[in-house]
Image 1 (tube, protein in one colour):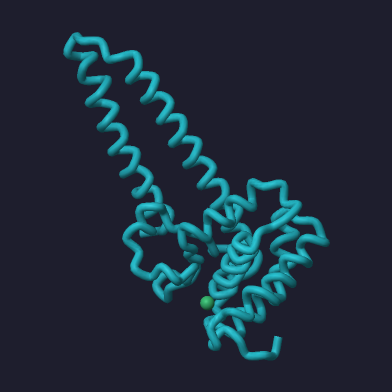
Image 2 (image 1 turned 90 degrees about the vertical axis):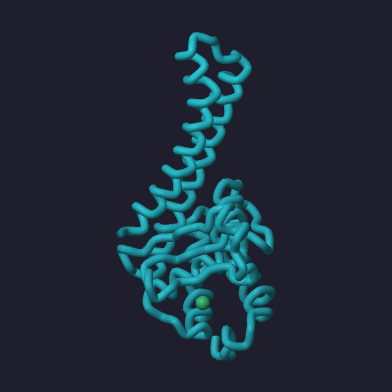
Length: 202
Ligand SMILES: [Zn+2]
């Protein structure tokens, strides 16, 4: 089964639950001859619009991230898959920001909070970047390097840092900010990574 169909199932499950709620509150009363409350209809329509818009933005940002994964990894099958909020709630590995599993080598998985930081930067004016947003860009690039087939963490970090400036520029930062993002990641984030992520040659 492809990852796309898995994601589609997650979405359709959430939509199914929401649809059942709407049916109970609005459709059932309608067919029983009693008018559903106008307030309920307005609330339902507002929630539907809000959920739909949020899902649209989520998918759009994830597609932009997938394009980065493809570019960095030179793997046309590479994709970004962000953890959902419900997935984050039950996640025991809270310190991990992203990973690629051997079972799904084309999939860069990034945790919910890190994706939110990435998405917040994508929708910004891209004139500045916070440390969290820079870290999110670094995690996306790092996992994309794993998708290329490199699994040594220190080598992955070296390759990732060499590509981060290009990634930032591709996503809309100007040359100055792209260089700053790359330098800040190297000087303030990479130096704090665990020893296996550092080998001192890059
Ligand atoms: Zn890694």
